[in-house]
Image: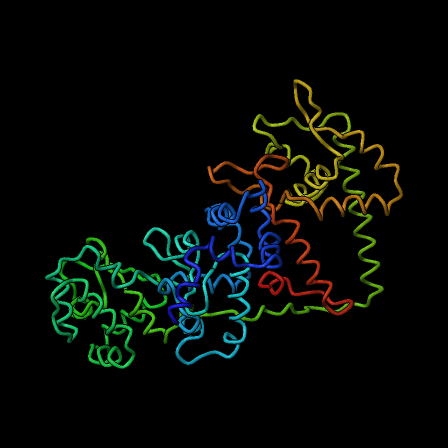
Length: 444
């Protein structure tokens, strides 16, 4: 890179945003709508907001798997990293045509969403994303990689580092910084590293192979066996705490052939058909299910018309009341939770607001009941499509280990409507009459 190019290169995310055109900025705000509320006063404020933990977490959660793997690879690469380095981490030393073809799109997506900035020779992952995705003892990386040699030797005595250099066949240095650099250089040199590993006894290589895909940490006694001592002496395992050792990132990457992930997924898995039915059968079955849905909701609302179960102090139905509702509807409890939540989303039931608060049918229920069946079903379907509440998590536990109850708080998931839309779009893409394999839909 020339001096002029270096001076023109952005030095921060804010500078990178300033050189974007209006189309690119609009794409960023569409992909990360939380950045617009409240409207930022300038691009510096937009960049600051784009780097906040809450916003970055939301953006990472919405990435497809390959784009997320790309971000994870950047989190274990040097900062900044070149595109070639990133490609090596994603495709490995031997290369992978599918990864090579898909990586430009993934990098462009990360750039669009302001999770990555910089030119191809200086790709930078936003600092907050790096902190979230980089390996640490408390938060293991999905890559299964551990700390770098520099990170793992941060508290090691200079004398011990020089001993490792000697055992690894390297010349001593005048300071720890150059010693660690020399050791890291050895571990990233494929030829010299292969020779170092070939000289190890078989049991030592087996230990490295067990750790190379993670977790990278292992336990040793105060007097390690000879095959472990051989690894410790050469820095192929480094101590992190009394009795704990770690496989340095550079060593693991050599053993993996340069790959950050055991398996990359550049192409979405296909949705497979498990069975095929005549369209007439599908239509008739769907109509029957629609009528059954109306009958179930009507049965529920008849049960609650004159005042249903009490509202818990924290909100929602008690476990006992959900069980009673399931018995009344003759369905399993998770299914009962679905119908209760659907009726609530459609505005057909709500709290009666009395001192002794109970759930009851609303005036909208009477209006709904007078509609033709097709319109009643359409009202339920529209409510389900747009609802952010997720009855599927009822019975689980929240972050404070409290039970999640039907109609209670903490059931909202902002991504729920989009997930429903994506699943329906996948199903609509199948041949007419095809029933999908559920596992393949989940994988997709």
